[in-house]
Length: 104
Image 1 (cartoon, rainbow, N blue to C red):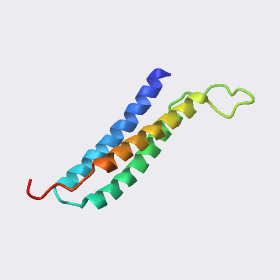
Image 2: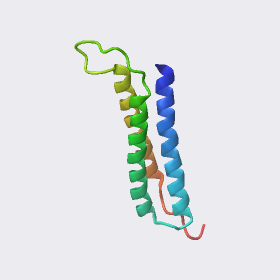
Image 3: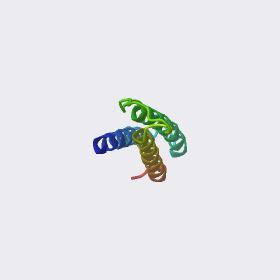
Image 4: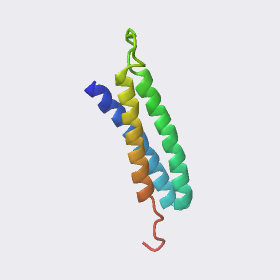
């Protein structure tokens, strides 16, 4: 289970960082403003969260259902961890995304 959680966390962080660096590059070369970049970054993070939660849900091998339970706790933990990591990457990216000074 530890390998599952580390791989799901790594996937969410990798997709989020790739989105952040792409948007930061576009802001730094003045292709978009920082405010527009924050909006696009938020949309990309929603997509990244959806993709990583889908992978977290479908990557667990189905087991025989146990009567009286609502699902596999491994899937629930994986999805919750993915959402928490994605929110942390989103918050960090939105705080660090700024316009570059024109004279620096």
